[in-house]
Image (tube, rainbow, N blue to C red; front, side, top):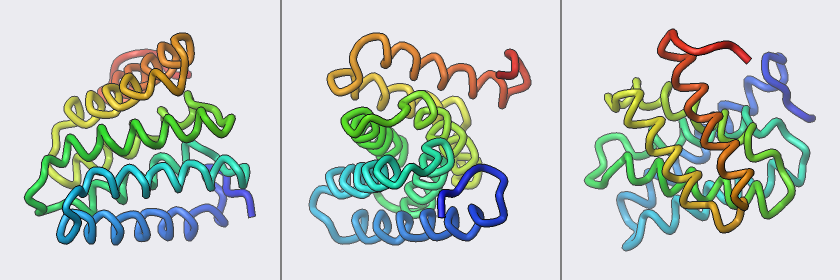
Length: 167
């Protein structure tokens, strides 16, 4: 199965990704000494698997970010920092495995804004954390890919706010 946005096959897989990531993050913030490291490993592992399987990176990135935010709800950690950490890991691993970082950034941003709204995080803070994570991944991405991915984050945020042009 190769899920694409909007297909009936993709919805159960999206819920599975979100729920799996959410459980892992919930465990990390409750029990791990370094929850950020564990969140990075979960997000990076999802990215590696998605690239290798040929899955839609926007779709997977969105569901990974929803899982990060849902898993961190009510935790005694900076949720915005976990969004940044997960975004960095996801973008880095996508780049290192030859995936489309712009599509990954697009999905991460949509997930951060949607999940942030559910978690009480303002959309601008959620999108900003994704952008910072993408910038933190610059070593893996390279300058032009970093710039394009950061521009995608801005585009998605502006479009979700009712401004900007559709792609």
